[in-house]
Each structure stands twice: as structure tokens, then as C-alpha cells.
Amino acid sequence: MSVRETTTQPETMAHFPDDTYRWIELHEEGEIYAHAAITERADFLEAHITFQRWGPQVRRWVKYDLEWFVEEARRLGKKRLVGIRANSDGEFDPNLFRFAKIYGVTECCVYQTVTLNVA
Image 1 (cartoon, rainbow, N blue to C red):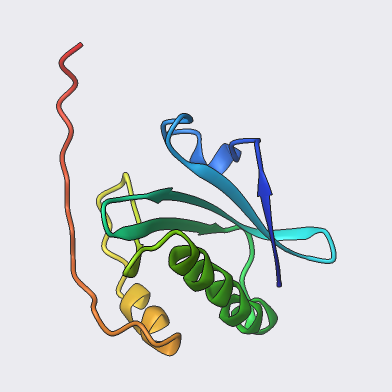
Image 2: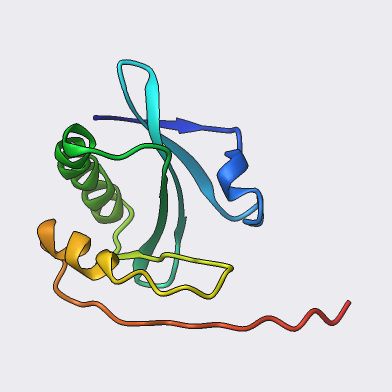
């Protein structure tokens, strides 16, 4: 349940632009269980988290990790922390909202995008 900022973009987030995001490792005693990418937006801190492993212990650690994200948003003067989940296969994860509510999230929505490359 430790948060460590790194300059190395995680392989699981290779599709993210590398000049906008800060890279975060979530680990316990050096063993990484998730990566995160965060960036500042107008009035919120945007966060993406990808888990490498999951289980009851990791679920407990996430509670403390979330506290770090909330404090970082406050430190940056942001009003909200917005978590975003992307799935390039177009699959909806019905567990996401249930998972988020465990940690006190009160606003959930479905957000879909499409991309048309023009260059």
C-alpha cells in the first residue's frame, strides 16, 4: 500500500501520450500490484489505474492508495478526482461501479469515445 512516482511509462499504459501523464506504481514491499497514470485537468485530477493482480489484500491496500490520490488532488487545488477506465475491445465492465462504490464513489457514468486518425 505504497505509492511511488516513477519516470518510466508502464508497459500496460504504452498507448498513453507520455508527455501529459505522471506515472505511478502501487506496491507492497516493492512488489507492484498496479500502475496508475494521473494528469491535471481544469478542476479535477484524472486517474487511470491498471491492476496486475487482485485479491482481498490488494483490495484493502487500495483504500490507502485512494487516500494518496485524494490528497494529491487537494494539494493541486482540484475539486474532484475522476477515475477513467478504458477498454479498447469495447467491453463494458459491470463490476467497475460496484468496485468504485466500495470506496465511496458517488457519481458513476458510462463514457464512450471513438477515434478517427487523420494523419
